[in-house]
Image 1: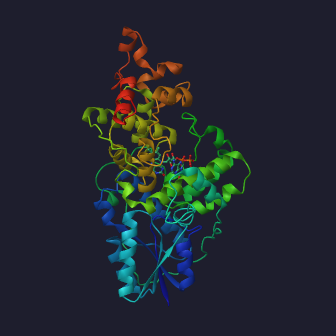
Image 2: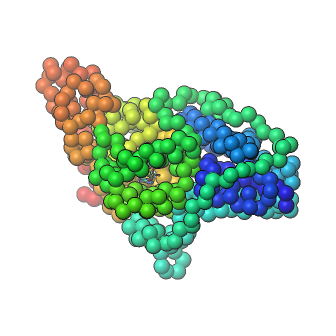
Image 3: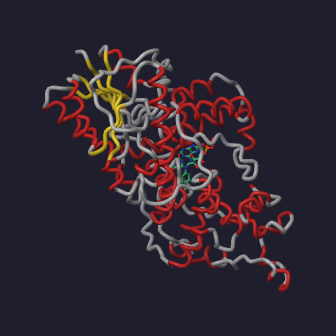
Amino acid sequence: MDVALCLFSSDLRLHDQPVLHAALRAAPQVVPLFVVDTGIAGAGFMVPNRAAFLADALADLDAGLRERGGRLVIRTGDVVTETCRVAAETGAGEVHLAAGVSGYALRRERRLGAELAAAGRSLVVHDAVITAQPPGAVLPSGPGKDHFAVFTPYFRRWQAAGRRSVLPAPRSVRVPAEVRSEKLPSAQVLCPDGEPSPALPEGGERAGRRRFGAWQRSGMAGYQDRQDDLPGDATSRLSPYLHFGCLSPVELVHKASGRSDAGAEAFVRQLAWRDFHHQVLAARPGAARADYRTKGDRWRYDGAEVTAWKEGLTGYPVVDAGMRQLLHEGWLHNRARMLVASFLTKTLYVDWRVGARHFLDLLVDGDVANNQLNWQWVAGTGTDTRPNRVLNPLVQARRFDPEGAYVRRWVPELAGLAGPAVHQPWKLSGPERAAYDYPDPVVDLADGLVRFRRARGLE
Ligand SMILES: Cc1cc2nc3c(=O)[nH]c(=O)nc-3n(C[C@H](O)[C@H](O)[C@H](O)COP(=O)(O)OP(=O)(O)OC[C@H]3O[C@@H](n4cnc5c(N)ncnc54)[C@H](O)[C@@H]3O)c2cc1C
């Protein structure tokens, strides 16, 4: 075989890239292909923030391939049709691809395998590319169990399981000269409607490796103690790079596991959470839309309240700070994600799918496995072992933003309120309160709690 095809998906990198590595071993010439999937755009998953990051990541991947004598081949359309077409044009005998976990990815994989086989070609699917442990590699004991539903026992098995070793970036990549490529797509071409958030991170493998390097040197050691510190903003911010595969989770786990500090251990644990949600989705693809463990909720919907939540105008400063950060950066701290999601699903008692959709519209790391299953976790319809816990925004603010610095950063109209008083502007006396152009709370927390507990049959 003279040519093999490496079909990039959520693995836009050259370091520790098993798909490209295998294609290069299979044939002297390789077509590094990315298909701009019109199916994803049609399903509403291509949004301005992720389009901007993806455009950066593709340009960076192309530059890295060019340094090695190759280039990225771009096509637009249905992934299966376009891949089969390029395989036929170049005579590629094998197509290499990373295993996906969503229902969409699994269907695409099956279709591609069948169409390639019909043309006498083969599809080779690689595990442990987009997750550190492949879904299904770490399973509970007992017949018929196809995934873990609780994180802690999953994590124990995950830690004990072996891991593949890290692969070097290729030195050279020879691409057949005649293979035609479209131009690298801009963010505007990938998503013509809407504007990206103003403060997005730069996409691509190089930016991701720089960020990981810097964070490894100066952030990871303190992560254990600071991971919930809202104003400290001391998490890695690597999630978009992991989402697009600009960084390899296997490589990150290896690098962090090579250290002995508690920060590195806590970081590895978070990477395992990522794998955990992927293995749930792989086993239960329907959990992207339907309750994983239904509580029979009959959710409310109040358009004005949902709009106030989306715009950061609920009257609860810590909730509003989170929602405004999301609009501005397309990213949000995990603690803030949890508390704004609890506010929507439990305090306002609105369907988790409403919140999950809004997050997917904005998050640069927005991802079916992590987003939908974290939303379900918070809503109590997912894998949380305490499904009825409610995060009180005032308690959360006191614990994770004790001096109010996070709120003052994102809710500037309250910046004149010093210290923790910024969390409860409604407590100000009449004339003082009137000086702040900030809404009253959309709901009384105690009323919200009673409503939720009744709805769940707890009182
Ligand atoms: C309602 C809700 C929605 C979420 N939606 C997404 C999403 O669409 N995409 C996404 O990547 N994460 C999502 N998360 C998980 C988590 O909030 C983010 O991964 C994290 O905040 C990213 O910041 P970081 O890279 O600084 O994380 P760090 O704290 O530095 O953690 C390192 C990495 O571990 C992984 N990780 C950390 N926490 C989790 C978690 N709870 N679940 C899964 N993986 C985790 C991420 O890949 C992250 O980059 C969501 C969480 C909640 C509560």
